[in-house]
Length: 250
Image 1 (cartoon, helix red, strand yellow):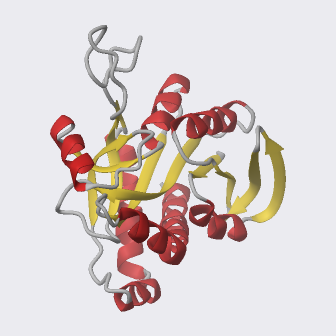
Image 2: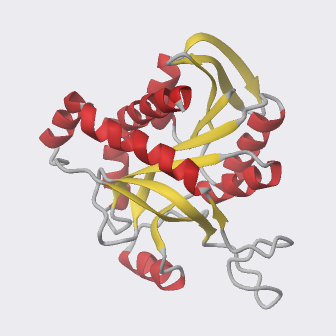
């Protein structure tokens, strides 16, 4: 089994890439793919770049050239739900493209030619990643201590719907509109739903795990960059470590 690992920002991927053993570096389509072994698991890791098109193109290459059997997309997101705080973890259940609107030809958010307005992660895949995140929160006490020193003392896990689009949600007004249009969406990012569409086309399992970096408000650009620089890589690597341990023993 080959695990594909994607992230949209280099800071989200740097620590994962550094931890890969027996690294082979392959450049394709302005991307650098790192093939090797992470925690005894064969992986291909890649910084996809921001946005739906960049992420979709990267996912296709992971599937067709590198023959990955499943993909984990890791990184940060902005909170749409008021119940989420910086440092909380979201496992995506349904994925919507919040900027897809072909009305009156079809329903708002409907992906052309599919009849779908969202893509869903199978519950058994969500359950496995849920256990991985719980193990991370329970056992990685050293990292939890570092987080608490930064006022992130009780991060929680939430399973919910994710809204993806080529917009950085960075104002209360934008967040309100998104929440009104997609009331089930609890966080927003720029890639997950596009990768979900690709993975659905090729029948490749996908898990999207996001850490809340900001409140998707007027201070989002400051909060997000600060969080990414300080904590995103550690979150991603720690959660992947637990997930890989579980898939080896499942």
